[in-house]
Image (cartoon, rainbow, N blue to C red; front, side):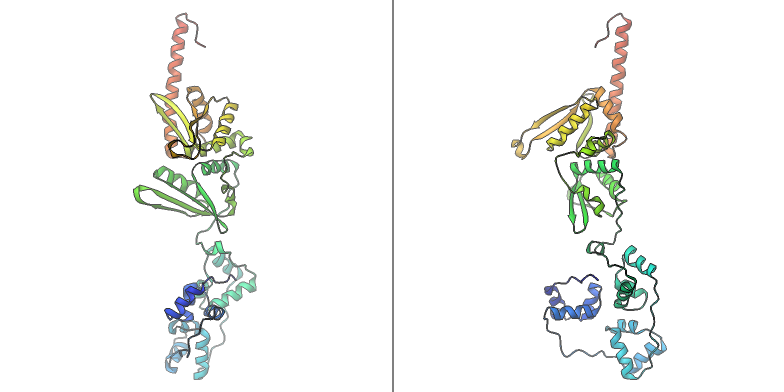
Length: 379
């Protein structure tokens, strides 16, 4: 059983300053009063004496226990003490006690409530009208392991990553472009912020099947997004200016990575009636790798430094990969279109693609006219 985390300072504040009983404090931490009492002794906190006697008359106790057939556990909750104290009162008053009630709960039901529904010992105990210690004993008897700290501190279930390499490539590309990822205890915390609702929708689309997605709108219509994932997403933690070789060696993996990186950092648009594709970041090596891989796919592109470090108060060189020729843009769109997920980026691609198709068709018509008039076609 995981040790209840409570600092000496907080315990002293609750016990000495606020004068709460060990039973009241136990309710705050979802544990048994005996746990709090042991911690009071560990911290050498002076126990309040004399101990206040639980005041309940024989008539009242007999009515609750004998006539209304309440358990010692339920009576204890009403009076504000432990069930053993109530049992002692029954003996003291000579009230005949019922045979000890055996809590019937199967291993499967206990496992489901504790590990699937994420209920605490106290919450399960309430369902069965018993104490948390009885549930703990049942856990030990069945050999059910307690939750670790990360599981215990979250009410939302976590699913393992699918293992799909295309999806993994996209997530890595998107992470390197836009996400902040850190390890939080045994969980993976993924964060981002944006002013674009399309980015919020994409964040949800990427992670809501694996864990709860939290979105908060702050000042200036800035959206803050966060999710906690299990350790199967540890591949998102590294933040390096590098595309891994397993991605570069497979065209589909690379195109999915490029789609993720483009959804995060790319720009697709029509400027001066001509389609353009641009990706600009401080990740010089990543951009250079993209440049070389696109060339190997017969897609001409330009890789150059746009702004050196020190200019405009920037700490790093800002570089860009650009595609300007309609044939190269068209070929890229044909390859990357199945992998793009960002709503606005997909819309921009459609507009740019239409521009490219119109220009290609126009050039083809012009060539045909020249050919029909006896001119040699331009090379």
